[in-house]
Image (cartoon, rainbow over the protein chains, first blue to last red):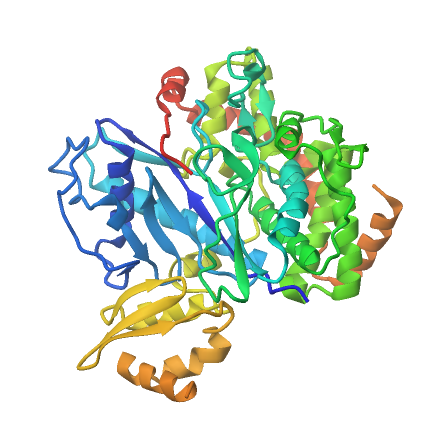
Length: 500
Length: 64
């Protein structure tokens, strides 16, 4: 039996500082601090010690900027259970652990609104001619990429080699509906050789994968990342850390990305993935698929056959339908799983018949439609800078500039649910415990991370509450316990009695 | 689309009665052409004014 597909998304946002010589690290720190300042309910991810002004690289607007923090210390836990921090030179949000793909879409959307709110506050404190602008994309068009990673709970019992080999087929081909689209190409092997003049491709990230499997995330990126850091009971689980995906503006594309991958992983764990669907050269194929918007390129399979990405996806979907009939979809949440399968069939049908039918779902098609329309209207050459500007601005987080918000994408999340998810945790995973204790007792929690919360209890010292099980600490399991506890000391006592 | 998929996805539709995507897709596609013109009008207004400079200065280093 497959492991319940607890999942989440980490998004590294692109960031620019207009009107000043300020490094992206500083700009990212300003953004994260803008959100945490004035909020007493936010707690440091690790023990956090403020060092205002320690690092003044590129700092030229002292009177306006917030006190500088060591960038690695700009690292907070939010009351919705998410982590908001500066990673490398980007602001990054990791959603809380979610029980299903739809919940993860909601918390990814909440992350976008947290970014918007941060940007608004930060820019209000900057001089009038300065502005920080944030982009939810994965490439600067100049050979630099930053990630949108997914995480899935998988069983430790399933051999990793099997997961890696079979999930690779999905990663290479799922981009046909969850690629975010890109004007131009950046793959090292083709830049300067003419092929980088490719007018448009399906994925932001495909150009950056150079290995089939490996530990790297910043150089020689692998299609399957081997980071083994489960953040939960390591004897039972793995956390599959996925780096081969684009950040989506389309909510339904995000749902499909997480939903289909959850189902495929469950299928792999139950030995139900079609064993003939193995791609001969995945590194070449991920780029071949991305570079062909007509979706007709034949991919060489390990068994000597050739198939298009669309045919491969249709076979994976058919296998998923058979899997669902035999095993059910409880592990991905049956209702969400059925919805995902319907949408999956729908999007493949659209891609097969008329791409514009799914322009309200698939980011690359929504973006390409704008790029093509704009090219035609103004009689532009394929490599006009305005087309690349459209590509970047599709992902602009400023509502008044964002082209994705104008592209007619169908949405899933109600506004009030997104607003609630900015501050309230999901109820269905251990994130509920983390978020709720932060809401109620922010001054008594001295640190929190994915698998523990540390309280400072008067006269007792530090008490660490471990959370090795992602599906404990839910509202149904600890809601009453939390509600009936007067203070952390009371809570810790009740917890210790419960587990005696 | 393979025959089996059609059949099975129809079966799935009855399993998940709350989801019926076909009308959504159909209605959006009808409006697409009309929408595109007004969308392009809007893009003419909101697109960064100095595209060349904007694209050139958009540099992101140190990502995963």
